[in-house]
Length: 203
Image (cartoon, rainbow, N blue to C red; front, side):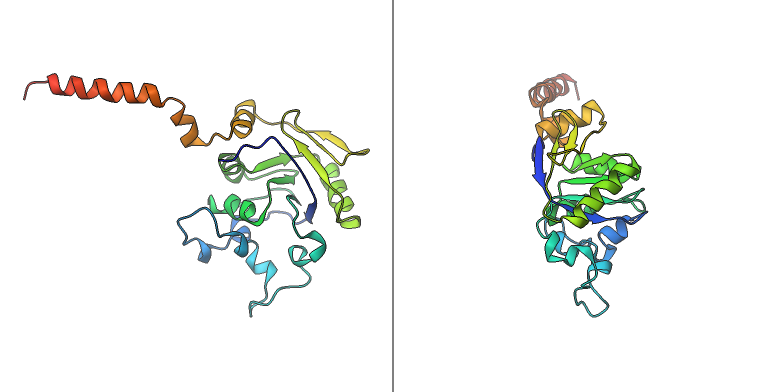
């Protein structure tokens, strides 16, 4: 997993409530075994019409927001069924941060395990970021995980809360496998001793 320390980028405002995981990445696209390649299917039902043509009214199809790395959304983002493909698709599209008033628990946990940073802010602050991005799509925001802050480099600066263990994992690029491999020497020693003990047991 890639380390996350800080990013500076533009914002996509998607101010809808209860965006569920089947809207983020529809179930018919969950056939790949890799973690990559899902970005093109992100928000498929909203990005494209029934004939597969881009929906010009959807914000991700607006050239003004191309290349954004921060997504701002309404409350209860990531609700619905559990699927790690949701953070995979968001990251594959280029997002590293999701800002919302609240998140569904499973999506929130999956995000940290895959290097995506979900930030909970007060509804008024989320709305302010979205309004700023709408008025000035080129406006850049910086997110710094070292001091847990998000700022526009001007008058807007907010602190966000994050569990210290999750923060440590993101800063050091540690997913569940990475955390386990930190104990590789102890695991190897245990397995060797286990093999020795098994060999000493009479048949």
